[in-house]
Image (tube, rainbow, N blue to C red; front, side, top):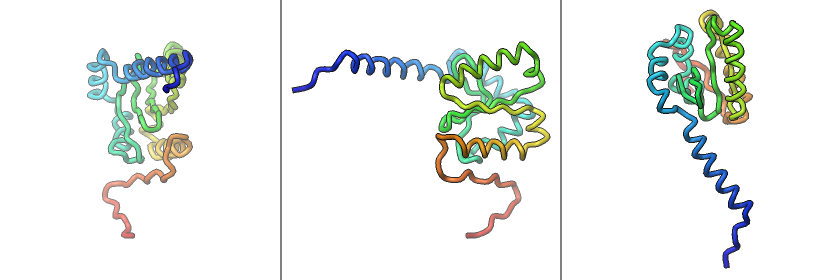
Length: 162
């Protein structure tokens, strides 16, 4: 004889199914599709430089660019690590933008995302430092695997044979 579901168990199942529906709709809202495409086609110099080091799992994880989460579009997103990278230009220093960035950060952190911010200037003038910092943060991420992050291979470098 089957045990009858308690109200609490039934409610939990209902909440979980509703949460899946809500969470499923939080990524890449159709209404933002043209905006995301426009942002991908018109990336800043710093975004282009950083993307050249993130794409193709060069850090050991897949990153997406100009990814929609809720009403926001983040610069770079790693689903496996729930990690967001934001590239901030000069406008992010103004009070109104600081307030908007804080609101956005609270929303994303409440969904369980880790957000790392780098300035255009840092990426353009200190890319190695930015990548070193990012690799360290990835290693500390509780969702990262125990395998080490592969080092970035520069073009023209000859790899030693094992």
